[in-house]
Image (cartoon, rainbow, N blue to C red):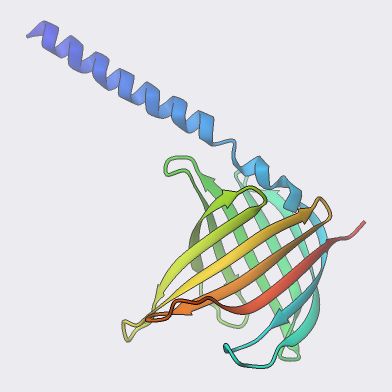
Length: 178
């Protein structure tokens, strides 16, 4: 009986140690996004529907580390439909499930949207399936593409249920303020 207890204790210790080491190895992924840190000028293009007209605006953003280096926080200020427009994104890395996370809110919709994402080379894909009160769904996607240390883009897309193509509804081009 004692022998069995020892084996169980050793097994539990081994499992805990393995998970802890795995978490330590993977929690360093957030620095991969440090290229996003800084102050940015932004050219933003938005439209309300797949066939709607594009509206072009300018804005600025400050992206910095926050919460004791645990996340990256973006604050955007610009215009949309000739009105002041603000948004905030927070990006973190979940070292337990090995995914990037993004939470977003803007002054127009006033709803928090949480995304999960993966990084592939210089592109980060964040996805979310949004369910409306009537139970219909739409897939949302936000794609960050790092073009250089001084330039990146963000594209916002959606795919309503029963469709198979992404509808681009927003494009933002970030240029570092020197």
